[in-house]
Amino acid sequence: AKLNFPVANRNILINGDMRVCQRPTSTTSINAYIVDRWRSFGGPLGVTFSQVSDATNYPQSQKALRVHRTAGNSQTNNIGVGQGVETINSKPCAGKTVVLSFKARRGANFSGSSNLLEVGINGGEGTNENPFGMTNTNGASSSFTLTESVQTFNLTYAVPTDKTQLTVLFKYTPSGTAGANDWFEITECQLEIGSTPTDYEFLSYGDTLAKCQRYFLQSGKKADGTTPAYSSHALSTIFSSTQFDMLIDLPVEMRAVPSVTFSNIALHIGAGAGTAITAFGDTGCNNMRLMFRGTAASHGMSVGQCAIVMGNNNTSNYIHYNAEL
Image: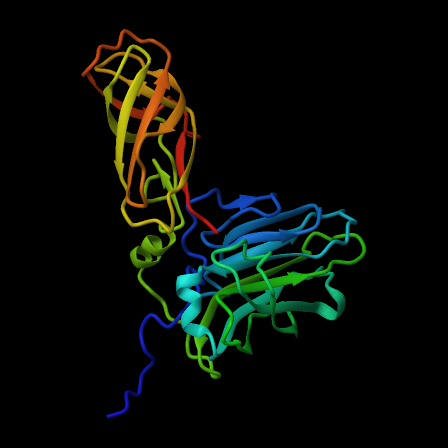
């Protein structure tokens, strides 16, 4: 018998409802990841990318991603956000039609020509390349007229058989000098196989978080998104007077062996004060288990002692594991 309801896990995009945000909820950086799996792009411009909470306009997702030009800014480079789909998830779309659906609205001072938002679905022929610099890129695009009220739009793309990566993009080219509300928002973005869009598929927050953590993981955050001053990151064993070994089992298999960055992390032994960590070195990492040899100032450490790697009394402490495209 034919099923009369949509197949589960049909959305090729991750975090299309913008609910997961392991990073800070706003940034002014271009070509940087923001809300999980979404990346900014464009030319130099005063702009803020942010996760916004809005239960009135988005009663189901309650979140959106906003691209907000800074009031008084007069630069007019195009600016936007997009999401790249890794090769293993893009290949099933080759030779098929896909449809992108999304919700969007604009601010009262949106300066895009004729209030148009430019939207695209691009295909490339590389393997896990920069989503905005794929080999042999082509695709489908259209411009949609935004209003201050939420609207739902869709765009289709017949994916050629040789495409191995997909990217979706949302952008506009501003004009004049920005007013206070020169922005657009998107949410409930869904890319699926077929030519007719279905209702947005809401996954549980936990399922979406696990999908996001395949690409990026921040250690130390609490469930409410805050980072306590003494957040614990890992257990370790003292290797020498200035070095320690640390083993971390990741919650999910990441897309690739992640790069690691950290800030305000200290090594704590017993009840004593911590000593700042200055480096981590890879001693045998894979996509699920990371083995590091860290370096810290001499702190009366004895070989074989147990220690804790944790925040150094600073709420900006973190360890970031990054396997983004």
